[in-house]
Image 1 (cartoon, rainbow, N blue to C red):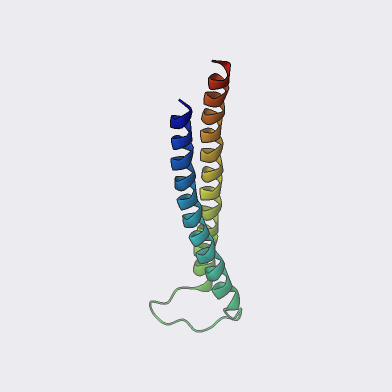
Image 2 (cartoon, rainbow, N blue to C red):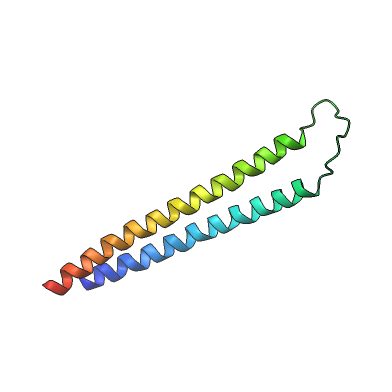
Length: 96
């Protein structure tokens, strides 16, 4: 039983490392997009057909940051749920 728990923990660890890599990539993308938006001039520039307004780009960055934060919350919840199952299993193993 202990070897199964160890194998489960190993797989869980690898999957959470992959999730952390994905979240890190999202974070870097959101930061870079925010830097680009911040560097845009604040004055009104004449728009040509087909260009996007800076406000729309800022909204896109806000959505990206929100998606990143939601993904982080989901990641933390998943980790907590998995650890809860593991702790219950370890507690049951010690009692036997």
